Image (cartoon, rainbow over all chains, first blue to last red; front, side, top):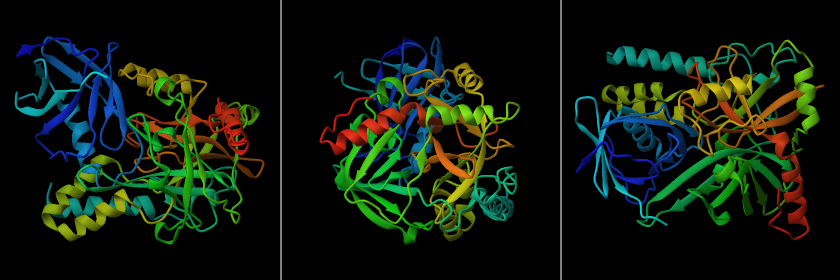
Length: 116
Length: 320
C-alpha cells in the first residue's frame, strides 16, 4: 500500500462506510480534481468543494451540494458527506482508497472507478 | 444531551420554522411580516400558484424503489422550469415516464398530477454549471396562470430601484425545514422515543405544506469569493456573476434546503411577481456563513424561449 500519493484526477466509488451500509443499487462517487476541487454524487445530490493533501494527511471540505430531496437516501448521503469531511489521513493502492479519522480508525473504503 | 433537552430543542425549532403569522408573499413591498422567518413560513392556497412539485420514482437493478423530488415553476401552460440537476443523475437524463408533476395545492397530499412528455436539462450543466432545465408536460395546465421569468432589463430595474439596498426575493418549496445538524437531534431523539422521532424526522425532511421565505440578495462577487476561499471551483460549483444569484435570509437563518432544488426565487416588481432564480446548491442550509446559490434566470431567457419555441416547431434540440 502506498501512503500519501497524489489523488489528482482519480475517481472512486465507496464500497464500505463505518457509519452506514451502502445499498448496492445506489450510485455514489467521489472525484479528486487536479485543481484541488472535489466533486461527486451522494446517491441523490451532486456535491462539491475543495481538498488538500500533505503527505498522507488529507482535508476535505466544507462540502456543498445540490438541493434535491430523496427521503430514503437522506441519512446515507448525510453520512457520506460527513465521512468525507471527517477524513484526516488516507492510504491507497492501485484499486483501493481508504480514509481514516483523527484517531487513525477506518472511516470508509473506496474502489477506483473504471476509466471510460 | 439528555432526552428531555433533545425534545425541547426539536420542538422549539419546529415551532420557529412554522409558527409565524403568515407567508412571505402576504407581505407588502416593504417586506413587513417577513423578518421573523427562520426556514420559511407555511403558504396558503393560491399565494404561490406557479409552484409545482416534481417527483421521480424508479426501481434500481436490485428491485429497490426510490423517490426523489424537486420544485419547479409553471412558466407556460405546458412547461415547467426547474434545475438541470433535477432532470439527470450523474450526467444521464432521467426518463420522462419515471417522473410526474404535482400542481394545484400547497399540500402535497392534495396535489393533482400530470405526466411528463419530455425532460430537457441544459446541455451546459456539466461543463459550465448551467443549472437550469425544462419539463414539457403531457397536457397543458389551463387553470393556473404561469409566472413570468425575468428579462435582463428586469434584473437591472431590481438593482437600480434602490441603490442602497439589495433586492429582496421570496423562495418557496417543500424542502427540508431544518439544517442537518438539527436532524442529528432527531436521531438522538430516536433513542428516547422512536415513534415521535420518526414523525418528526418525516415532517422535517418532507413537510406536507409548501413554505416560503424572504431572502436578500448577496453580492455575487463576495459570494463567489467566499466559496472560492474554501476550495469550490469545479464546473458545477463555480459561481459565475453572469449565471448565478446568491441570497440568504436577512438574519442569515433563512435559506432553501434539500428538496427545494429547482424551485422558484421570485421578486415583486410593481405589484407583480417575476421569477429571477432557480434553487441550485449551497453549503449546508442557513448556516449563517454561506448563502444559497441560484441560477440566474434572466441569463437563460433566450434559451428558455428558443427551447419552447423549438419544441413547438418540432426541433427538440434547441440550442442556447
